[in-house]
Amino acid sequence: MKNKSILFVLLIFICSCNSQSISGYWTGTMEVNGKTADLSLDLNDSTISSSDNMFVKQRIQNLSFKNETLRFSYITDDANLSFEGVVDSSNITGRLKIQGMPPEIAMHFNLSKQSDTSPSENYTIEKFTISSTGANISAEIYKPKTNSLHPALVLLYGSGDYTKSWLAFDADFFAKQGIEVLIYDKRGSGQSTGNRITTTYENLAEDAIACLEILNQRETVDKNKIGLWGLSQGGMLLPYIASKTDIPSFMIAISPAFSAYEAAAFSDSLRVVSRGYSSEDGHIAAESHREVAEMIHNGSDYKEVLNFINNNTQKYRFMNLTGLHDRIVINKENFEGLYWSGRKYNFYEYWKKIDVKTLCVFGEDDRYVNAIKISKAIKSIKNNKIEIKLFSGANHMLKKTVNFRGFSEFDFPRAKEGYLEFVSQWVEDELYTEH
Image (cartoon, rainbow, N blue to C red; front, top):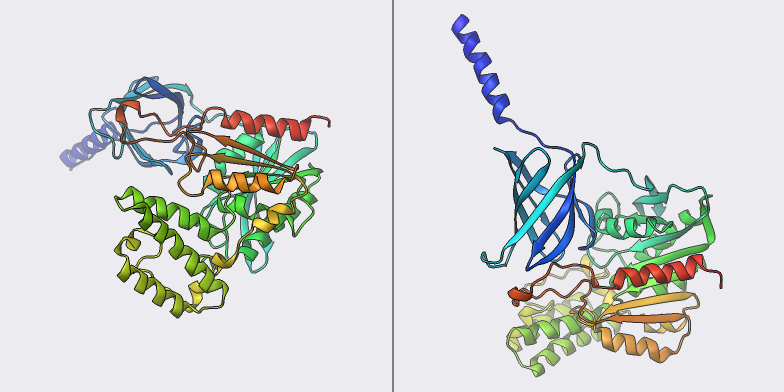
């Protein structure tokens, strides 16, 4: 019995020696090709941040700490990042890998421990549920820690089942400018209820208006300074939403299109050509999207649309590189949702009716919307309420265009130089300067 007790104690000792944990708040940089970007790691809540690369408090994956070696990964919109570093008492030094990059490209990161506790922010985050038509929307408000009345902003993301975490950087960015910011899980995603498949643009507009009304009821909000910010699909919907409510006094549209089908036509035509097909083939891919949109607008049912798509892919095999491929499943339920029925909408006419100050920002290297064509069309409206800004070398997310093929010139997918500063100054001039 005595020997068994000694063995049991020994096993506990061995396990405790091999069981390691790491905590605290760490900051530093990551580097590639002599280019650096900021990096912070909060191991108290397992999150990663980089202001340069436009992500804040994002959950890391595959975290492990063994034999003084820390490993973790983070998947962004742009790349799959994996980290491995050696930890001493106050530093973590190691290598960074990006999926798709050759191993000879050296990438490093260095972090220093700043504190045992997580840093405090100059805002609080309130969680609540908003009742909308046919759905309960899970939302958060970032509220600055000041006693004055705040401007306020509802943030709208692009197409897809996005949740609040995807808007954390933008919420943090605007909250630090003294703005109360409302973000929410899109209908049918995250903690929000509703059917994502059958959701319509009308539903998305109703959700945004419900959020605007919540801000308009808050005692801490300046009712004359409530706005809308939208990226991609969110930006496309801003003038439509503004036509249904008089709450917004300003709007910021990032990479908006006039219609989903024209965005699909543009991006798929680029994809076809980039895969070695001719420009004429790219044109056929674009026209196929326009034809489907016309069919839906004219009342064709899902069987007719599916039949067209299948026949089209038989005729043009490159169509299987596009969103109109022969593996598509269309039924009565999903045909009523915005992915298909939304193709009959074109919001260009609503841009003509905008009567509040509106900023439109585009990246000239956008592969999802034709930034040059759309910006020219908006300019042709000659609405002095709308200001347009284009950034060369910037993509759909207004990040610096990433060239994975030009490895010697590769840089991190960081915010395009001047973009954040420009938006910050526009907001400062619009909200805090006497006119």
